[in-house]
Length: 141
Image 1 (cartoon, one colour):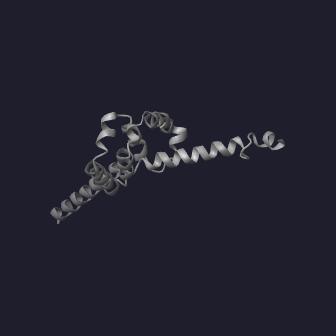
Image 2: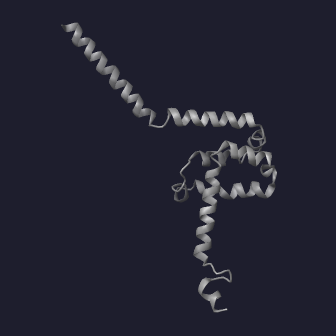
Image 3: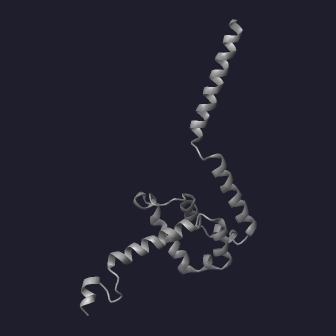
């Protein structure tokens, strides 16, 4: 009985512990949304047709706020969380070919946009300028 007042509940866990566990579980779930195969699983298992689950996805939009988004490792998860608000997107996720295409596009994004594309553009322009200068030097000789 005395335990209830020190821990805040009869379960033996403090309120802070419960909030931390909830935070971690929601963070992990949101990040799972970055995986197109998992999205396909959710669609085929009919979770994406369950009104309670759809409401949960709406609730999770708070992860887009900067104070929460800073904990997200896979930013695609927030993009997919947005897309999951759309009924049409939820329906097409049942098709494994669609999810394979999403996964492929995601791979290409990681492969080709790992660095800042503007930085790469500057590198290309610098190389062109350098080549141009070298050509001019050769013409002078």
